[in-house]
Image (cartoon, rainbow, N blue to C red; front, top):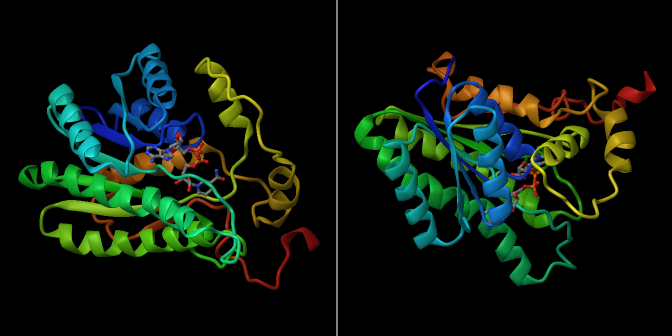
Length: 269
Ligand SMILES: NC(=O)c1ccc[n+]([C@@H]2O[C@H](COP(=O)([O-])OP(=O)(O)OC[C@H]3O[C@@H](n4cnc5c(N)ncnc54)[C@H](O)[C@@H]3O)[C@@H](O)[C@H]2O)c1
């Protein structure tokens, strides 16, 4: 398997995208450190991977708490001896416009996305530098490539993460560490519901996904939405030696969404 003997930290391991990436990396042979501010998301992810025959631990950690991040990285090294892969995935959604968003919420959302990625990259790559190997994968969004109205902090921080990827890639290339990003888009909700059930998690009342499953699916050039496992397969590739010469690059797993000419609506043709 492509990632045998590797150890991966993934932040934000809900049954949706982080969980899908964690299961894909584990399926390729990596030991998983599932990190989440919500202990249920860390622990259920790790338990599911162990139940499937893999190696995993869950760590409850707020990615914006520097002491907690340092301790989580130390715990991962104590448990597995090394870290080879970091996936900066933790985020939260809070769609508000400039006019409606309180400053405190702007700071909080930017902080989870950008400060969280900065802190985990700082402390994980400090353990990778002496080994002269490692890969960091930052999870973006098509909203980080385009101007989405009414989602100002998210679009701003995700765009920031794109160039964080390039800057970090330049700093770390000489140390044998690659830094890349992966861009998901509106995601088919079916697989995450199935994963939550398999992980014995009750997600409670869910948002209305009808806009995603109908209107969004029609506008995407491939006419169907990606699933978390599609992102997981891309993450396995990016983390593996198959991508040994890829750094500072973004891999869009978006069914063609960002490449689409703005005036063309694929549902018209
Ligand atoms: N769902 C989508 O359609 C979509 C589309 C494009 C990009 N993305 C990106 O994919 C990633 C995962 O999204 P998702 O849909 O799975 O979201 P999600 O809400 O299901 O998962 C995000 C996880 O991050 C955790 N988290 C939030 N704040 C944290 C903190 N301070 N410290 C530690 N963990 C924290 C949450 O508890 C949760 O488990 C995010 O980076 C998101 O921006 C999602």
